[in-house]
Length: 191
Image 1: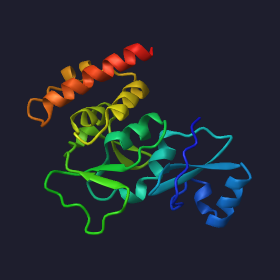
Image 2: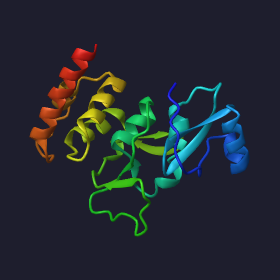
Image 3: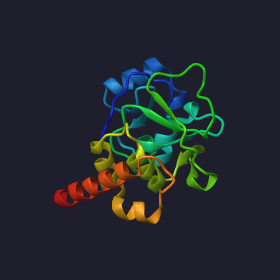
């Protein structure tokens, strides 16, 4: 199990959320718990416990407001685990303005996920894993390494994913095709 350590300890999954921060630090130092999540949304879990999608989603609950949903690499992290991405990606409806006071480490994208593309994970709105991968393929700011990692975690062929969701109206279609082909080749050689 990967133990990713963040810097801010503001959200904790139950039952650890009830403990004071100083006690959490002592428990972490003593090896009873570990920190996980993003730098702007950290959670704690028992060393003996297994992290679930609900645990990962709970660290992001306070960041998701209104009709926003966790998207991109962050949604893949919630669904499949692995190391947390550097930034939390929040998908908002087209035309929606990001909050006036933006948090560092949070990226707002106007990708307009339709209601059927969003699922509740531990009470937090999260874009479905396959559509989060589709967003990564079309996002010019996402790295090929994060796409390759997502393809491995989800065990999904990105070329077939593009075929399942025709994207003639989405921007960066040729970029998505190229990235899907690269990810397919990278995962074929890694197997």
